[in-house]
Image (cartoon, rainbow, N blue to C red):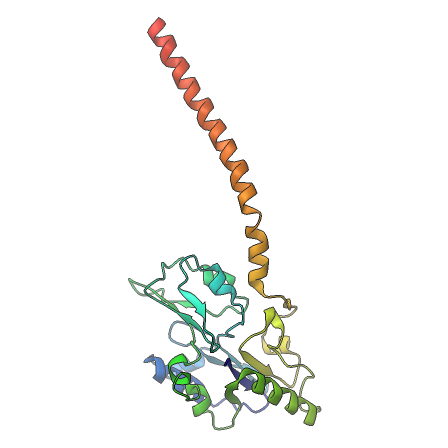
Length: 248
């Protein structure tokens, strides 16, 4: 069973209860100064962003085929069968490839620590494993955030759009973007106006990675031959020089 989150921006009132609940869950500090910073950070794993008279939420999208996990050379990130993309700090080597790979700019880094880690939402994996909703869902007073089985979440999103077309932009975000995500979003206006990346492919991003990596064996083979040639020429010159010195 794969879970998902539905965020309906038409219902969000910008109260930031989700931010407070998330900070409490992770044991992160939270005050007026942090609340005013409408961006993700190592201390803020979800954020409400003001878009004119509307509000948008940013958090890990928990892609069905996450680019962050495919880019990680030590498998510190992986997608669970239940939906969350989780992080294992014990495996992390701090390369930050996941930060570069993420199409949504989600993973944050603890720049101010001696032993820094990547920080990101884990969709309250430990709560969902016990049958509980995410902390942000439980805290939302407007039901702008819901948690449930992905198929049911998508059905609910489509139902809202169909029943009230005047209130919604006629698209559900997350069904097919980058191969699909476990965070589904609704908006009254085009999603790029709410800060989501425009023109995302429908193909999962790791597919692009594997196509690029499929060329690596040829590149490595050619490179090995070239490097071997350089090595032979260099040492051949040294050998000739030694013979000439003996003759002299």
